[in-house]
Length: 366
Image (cartoon, rainbow, N blue to C red; front, top):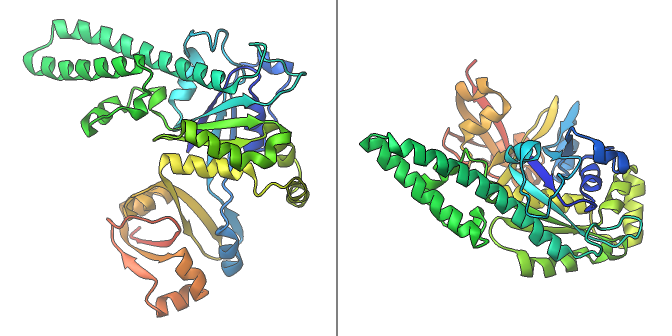
């Protein structure tokens, strides 16, 4: 899963990137002149891994990962209806979801370019930038269709007219400030649009970057924001980016003590990862053994044969069947032998949809 970060200047976007990925990207003045994107990986903290490690004592443990892409500088004119283009557009189009960092903290040492902090204004401004980027893509494609229609044969003309009608409808609704993710589309239309990389079609995680004084109120703030902004394909998380970056630089014990002292219930970054998974409809399954305990990320409703391909294409090609037991049943049994004895370790075929928390061993021909 790859998540692209967006945010207006001084929103704390790169600070959040460092917190999420335990990175060290420059957040000072030098960052303004940087041109290469920041790339980072976050290990998904899954509470189910520790009991599996305790049970199997593997040589190594591999959690699932989320990749984050952060453009180090906001393009000149962003938030002034200049649109998103160039390298930033290419980066965001390649992402599975967008994470919009919205500044909701006050800090006189980090002035806001608009003079005052107004997160709701900034959120609306970025929504418009994403819509303008999609409108530009739509307009270019419609222009090409107009040219192609002039010399198209009857069958080709019909297909291009259907595409033109779909794009016209998308454009009209975008101009009415309805993002593509909220528009009603048939399955055929979704397939047609799959390769366009529309930004407003991507799931969106709004990350409300609050001040340290509000960190303990994050769940309350999130509830208020969901009332206002919650809708299909959109989730909200509130956290203090500066604090989370500092905590990410500590060892786990010291970070835990500081969280307790501040009345923080759990790492806010874990909430952000869970929200990303929910937005994208992702689940995790596990492979276990003395060599390795590992979490794998797949789409919900993935059949067993395709889940096998997540591990290796040879396993997918030679798939015979899958031995499956749920995480809860495995913990209840205390091990695979007892699970097999109770009939809870079962055999499943190619079309079985792997469930979140399944512990799977794939049997295959080499």
